[in-house]
Length: 436
Image (cartoon, rainbow, N blue to C red; front, top):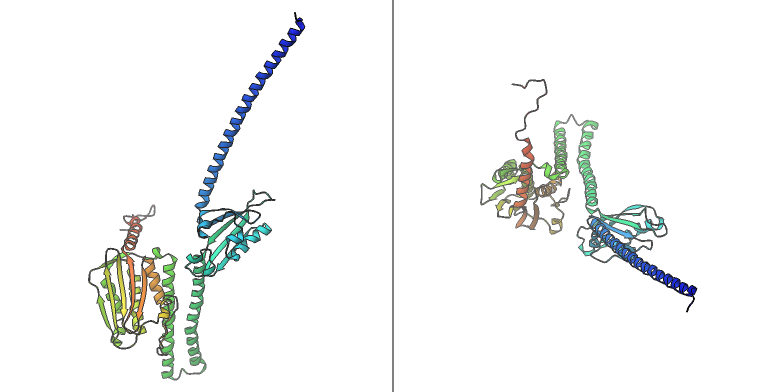
């Protein structure tokens, strides 16, 4: 028989092994549970990260400006929808800055930030063929703002730089137009002022006031140039009102187009009579009512008819004013059978201070060069457009088209703006009886 000590030792060993097995089983279960929890947390973290990326991408894709993230190696790590659209759908991710930007003037601004770590904001003005839009660019000279800065929470050894590219072509072109406008206006005003000053010096310094006939001739010339200055200033004010807020500058009401035609012909009656010109009205519906600012439409038609008469001082000119309407558009035109406009000038005639030289008499005072510019701006303020065609000696035609939808919208806006004024009670100061 085995000894009791041996049996007890075996039983103790078996109990120890059993306890060890139970402990191992519990550890395995705990490890499996921990692994499942880690896997669950990892999956949840991946889902949250993916959701965060989607929300980030949606937020950045909603930006109107191109946005990119660039790493320390000058490689694009993220590009939003506007950036992909700007670069014509090319896949920018993983490309270097120099590969992404075809024009190195755009890349140079960003590289300065990458090299120095300092924020930079640079404007690049590019020719049409150098635009990031490539062959889709139709605006001529284009301008872009490149705004780059390092992210504050990115590590110093591997910094990330955010880049915003903003299209400022419209602002740049507006700025150039204003600069040209000021320069041209200064030049146009300087010329008549110099002439007036010259005649005044002759009258005063040369003692010509005792010669009534010469004095009268000088004063007539001075009056013509004074009238020219007044016309330039008036035209500049009209353009300024239109550009300060086109819709707000309009006082839209329905009016009969025929009455507008009659006002124009009445104002030009003496010129028409002196040139023995014939004015024809081509208007099937004599009661046609148009919704717009009558002041500006009278100005538009006056400028077009006056322009036709001034550019064709010969006797017997025929000018036709017409207006028709269909379900989609109201079409107005002014045409003449004069000398016409050279094809080289057709694309420029709506520019400010642009004149078509017709070799008229040197004694004539030139126009302001703003008439057709006012015409174009006033029509655009009404949501319309104007085109010009010319066959010299046969037909020079300015055609205006205003969509019925734009006309209705302007009328609705005018009525909506007028509603708060209706029924408004007069304000009476407290303690003051109203006037009888």
